[in-house]
Image 1 (cartoon, rainbow, N blue to C red):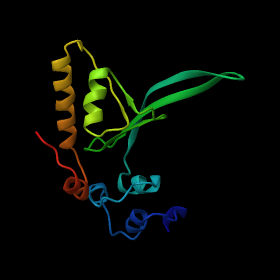
Image 2 (tube, one colour):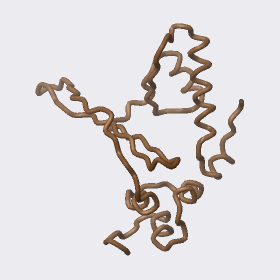
Image 3 (cartoon, helix red, strand yellow):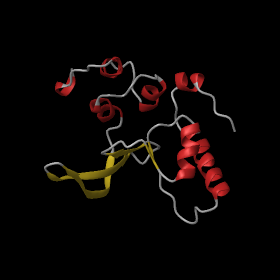
Image 4 (cartoon, rainbow, N blue to C red):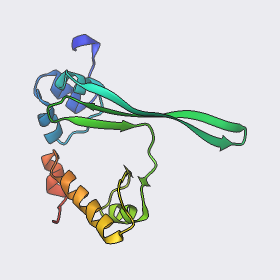
Length: 151
């Protein structure tokens, strides 16, 4: 195909054949987005910002193992934003948030809070409100039919 890109997924082939020409269409298709070339083609003006680079050490039998963790956010300043973090650890957050997210069926999530989080009721309500707000973002139609959000 163009620029030496040989699509390997169904979504990639549809983008390469111009059946899908916008990122909104790709997301609504419900097909997994596994090739970076798809994003490059549908969102050519992406900008990125490194939020954090941190050294992480882990003790092993042979001594310390040093790795680096990098957190990056990308976006096109027109409604599309993405967040990448180099490591999956399951539910990383306070006890209240973990309980709410577990019951929502979420398995991988990083959380961050600011302000006073000692009031369990308010913290749980804020977590629920955040989940409700994410349900209003762009979600493929097929996923909307499978899951139900209760307000």
